[in-house]
Image 1 (cartoon, rainbow, N blue to C red):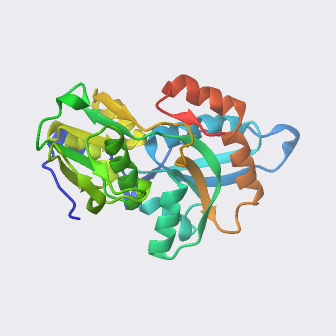
Image 2 (cartoon, helix red, strand yellow; image 1 turned 90 degrees about the vertical axis):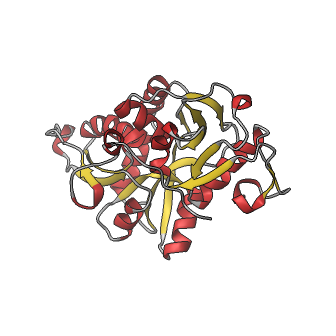
Length: 282
């Protein structure tokens, strides 16, 4: 399977470019109020995708400041560096991925990272700025999808669910493009790095995009695409988790971070801010 690269405009190149070493930046931190009783403040350094992960963490940072936890947020714009940085002990945790991706990454890179718990779900969506319905897709239309194994399978399953393609029986979300058995419209399905997908919408007829990257493009580029299809949330195994090095799950600062991330206050924040595009997974 070959990755597909599209020409980018200078304006679109600005998406995802963050200052600092290694494509990451630490979110500005305000002086945190001291916790009641003068107890020691714990610090936890968390890598995250800008949207919605870092946005949720910024809300949690305020909660943590009142409860003795200083949450330091380091933003990343890709799906590789956060796990490498965590394994190299540059981070205490990261928050950007689901368990199938984490397991695949562990196997490929021989890492030993584990989930400390699920926080939210981002259903994949099929987006377009050119058509308003899947039935309007023309023969030979270009469709872009994520190129990492776990999300590619989800994307193909979503396309199959809308009747655009058929897959081999039983492959489910482990499907690859080689598992396509029928493609009546002869759609040109190209795989790309997930963070690049919003930029393809100017050239592609439609794209299957991870919600975090679409929301980021919507925020930074004022992208306003139609949602042609969305992955069902019910019984979806792809909740986004906080990952840590194996053995760190019970560190006090990780336990406190998870307690805050899975609090009623955070659930309300997610529900009100994202209106269903992101849903709490606890």
